[in-house]
Picture 1: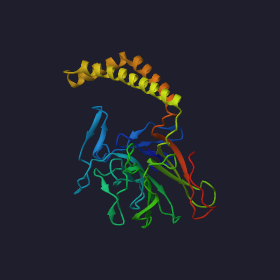
Picture 2: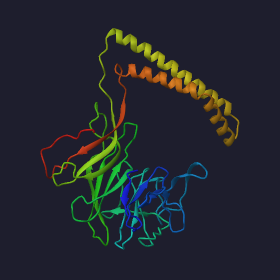
Picture 3: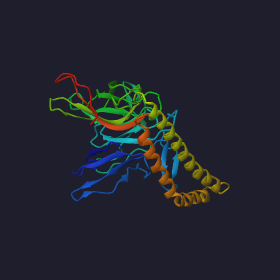
Picture 4: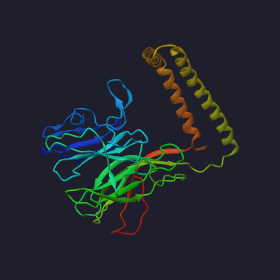
Length: 343
């Protein structure tokens, strides 16, 4: 999620550092021959760097642990570390890891206790502070990014937030923590808002509402940094005034949709009934077997629902959720204000 290109192991080749949804930071090593296979970044004891929640590849299930909790800090909620960037926080010439929590607004650090060419990361997470307080990004962390926002030669921290991904609660935003320290000791100041959290409720896609992933570049060549944000827009189009004929057609289409849903539900209920009383492993195997048998039937029902939905939607538009990339022009320097447009 939001990969970072950086010479992670000081060999003169760009590597890729990224957090992914399994809950661990990953590394893809670059070489003159190309990219290597993704690998988990491990701590000094050879264990995965995680928060509290992670995908257990051996057991093939979500798992939990408290072995990485910061000393003296018990998280109020379990954390899932899905974003990562490499940053030399203490000016010792090697990269530490800054990790964003998908489940909360917390940002953590794993200190590199080794060297630039042979990293050895601490076995515990460390809470990252800004303005003397633990960072708490509104809407939980979608991603962390580094940017020299004010051109002082120091890396600042930007965080895009997730927000309520499907419901009506507040969405995400983009927040900035300026580096008020030095190259030998990074210190972050109070949180600044670059894009406020979304209150949703629009009738058209006017902005990114959830899952905001920002990056920064001089998009228009006017000498300042603009912001590019990927994210989902949620909106509900205004109701359509229907003719009598359209109202009759809507009734027919809704009846067809309900019938298709019932057929699909009947198949799934039969599968559940067929696995009842079996142990977990046997139930999973039987479920997979039955789903394979009913694959074509379920696929056909899904395609029929899509046809119905395609005709029904223009007459009875439902809530929309679609991803865009948005441009936000920095107006500190440059031409007059123009609204952001989806690209």
